[in-house]
Length: 391
Ligand code: C2E
Ligand code: SIN
Ligand code: SIN
Ligand code: SIN
Ligand code: FE
Ligand code: FE
Image 1 (cartoon, rainbow, N blue to C red):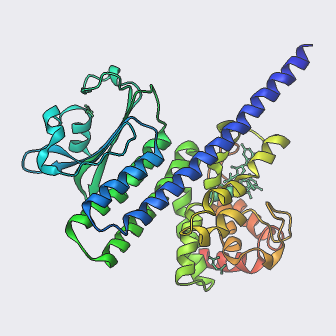
Image 2 (tube, rainbow, N blue to C red; image 1 turned 90 degrees about the horizontal axis):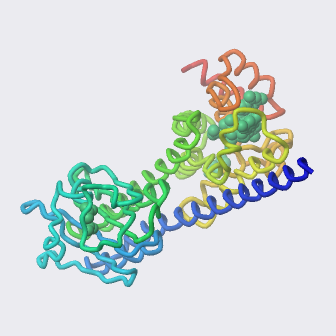
């Protein structure tokens, strides 16, 4: 009887976990797509009006809220003036800086939550504004708030403020997403005001986009403390190895983005599995093995990232066909994924993991060499060992 109950409650919690991972990865791909669209949309705007309108569309797609504002700092008066407002999700825009609508509510640099962000450049994420003495507003039904700075060329030019009547409405992921979108919006605002040079704005936006990718990689590392720095380290080492292996030009860019995002699919893996201190059960392993598939689902809709998918999707394929998710053999595995997987395992083994301590260099090298032609492309192992010796 006892046992039966246990089984049932176990099943229920396993189901809940599965749902959680599915919705996490869905939420995540929704965000990535929104971030992508932001950069695309903001590139082709001709007037401040159309930019304000488009920013509101982007924010409304991204987050549920009652009141949203993009406020820009007037440097001489230190007031925060509305560039775009979105009230009750009805998409009202307001870009007449002279009328200074909000200044009548006294939002100034340094005052309140919003004014604080405009001063410090540090984001705020507040679950219940009633608990925060700095908060003031004309509306007393507001409960949670996200506020992020707009930073362009290291200068704080304004803030995006999002407020809702729901308590604890936003997650840390929401905040990060808003920050990354804000970095694109800041550049777009700067471009709309100062330049007509399309070429320049394109470069700036793609730089902002790459910062976004770094943000995602970091978000994953925040969850799994053991892998701190892993994404950047494997990216640098993979690029060195890929150059030696003859990959160049745009393909190197794809390798760079793919390596940075290689484990982004782990966003869809519940903490109980990702952070488990011990061995995974068969069932947990089944879920863990989905992480390349989750990555595919998250990234494949995004034209900018589509060419970078080989690494996130194929980085656990093995030379002898024993890998996942496809079980590809030898040169069926994309070249970039064969290069990457050696670097990934090399760095993984040299680092602590929740489930084991770091291996020594000797043990790691022996493992790589022993697995030439089994786990790894034998030629790439040789080139990699050579590269390490020379470094
Ligand atoms: P990870 O920890 O970053 O490991 C990446 C890859 O490095 C692994 O892919 C595997 O090829 C290699 N690797 C890492 N640690 C070891 C090790 O102790 N021994 C050996 N022989 N190889 C190692 P793999 O196996 O497909 O695992 C993918 C991911 O699944 C891992 O990423 C980790 O997040 C998770 N995982 C694997 N095994 C366990 C486990 O026993 N417990 C937990 N909690 N997670 C695990
Ligand atoms: C507002 O009413 O939007 C500003 C309140 C604050 O952030 O302090
Ligand atoms: C990691 O990057 O931490 C794990 C590597 C992997 O699953 O390939
Ligand atoms: C890539 O897949 O992006 C690089 C091309 C290659 O596999 O050699
Ligand atoms: Fe992985
Ligand atoms: Fe990795």
